[in-house]
Image: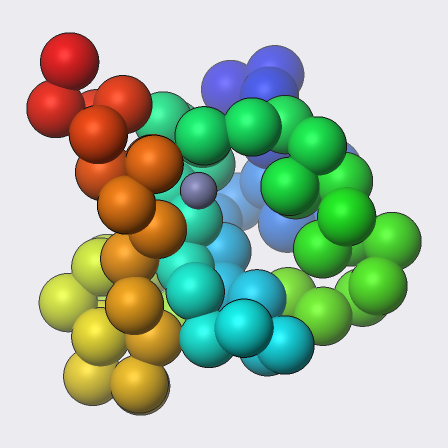
Amino acid sequence: MSDRLVRIEEHRWLGDKRSFVVHDQDNVCDKAVLDDIAAAESWLTFGPDTSVEARNRGYKVCPACAAKSAD
Ligand SMILES: [Zn+2]
């Protein structure tokens, strides 16, 4: 999982508190998105670490990440 950011590497689902979009670090749409979230320190992780939990918290799964995971 080398694409994952170091400080949040134990989590798969990474929410952006600014946009309420959650990205899938295992199928990330664009690494730059993660870098941007990290730079802004605007991430939120979920427990349990699932897309269902993210949705329950009001986050929307990133369509670009979802498209990659469907490949
Ligand atoms: Zn994404």
